[in-house]
Amino acid sequence: MLTRSIIGLPVAVTTYAGAVDWILDHAGKRDRAYAVEAANTHVAALARTDEEFGEAIRRFDLICPDGMPLVWALNSQLPTGEKLTDRVYGPTLMLETLKATDGRSSDFKHFLLGGKQSTLDDLTKNFAERFPGVAIAGTHSPPFGEWPENEFDIIAGKIRDSGANLIWVGLGCPKQEHWIARHKDRLPPGVYFGIGAAFAFHAGEVRQAPMLIQRLGMEWAYRVAMEPRRLFKRYFTYNTLFLYHLVRDHVRH
Image 1 (cartoon, rainbow, N blue to C red):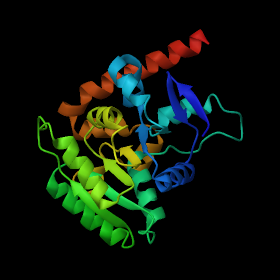
Image 2 (cartoon, one colour):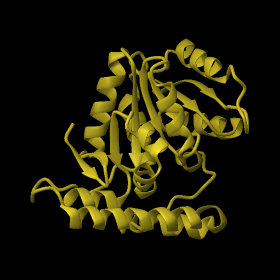
Image 3 (cartoon, rainbow, N blue to C red):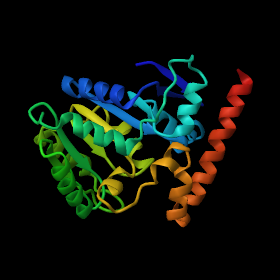
């Protein structure tokens, strides 16, 4: 798939349809673990400024433009007629993938990893109602705080036994990216997604920004308004770093 470098991050020039096609094609291979990331400005800036996270994200096979600023940066490098009209937003990509596998449970099975057990229960219930032909083959809520030494073996065993080849990892950024990258060569075959807040959104625990705010690239402001203590420093820091490196790279080139 065609990619363009956005502050050093190889972001795919793709749509929801293109990303889902790639995902189902690679999930069907069942030959190894593939990693997919929906990257926003936070992910891009962190990959540029944090060496360890940058190494982790380079192990990902498909990086989709989750944030509108990444779409705008991509479009600045594309000719007229090939520009993207929308982002590939992680929570929506999850729904589009579920929709594409509805009624195809013999070929595609999903596994939900991360979050509280109550969240996973709500997700499983909601998805069963919206996509009755989708196979949610298993879930796992890891322990809070420090994980025991055998936690990876437990998780890998559950995924393997479930037969899942679409594994949604909602551990929060950057923990989920580090976990996928660190264990990629040992994970059961399938496509692994760093899916961030999608679990909380689809379980009905956190409200998503209205579509107009999303299209304006201002979802970060909406989320900061909802959770100022937790998110203000993160978004202010990494949005600023993203803009700094974007302008710096543009001037250099």
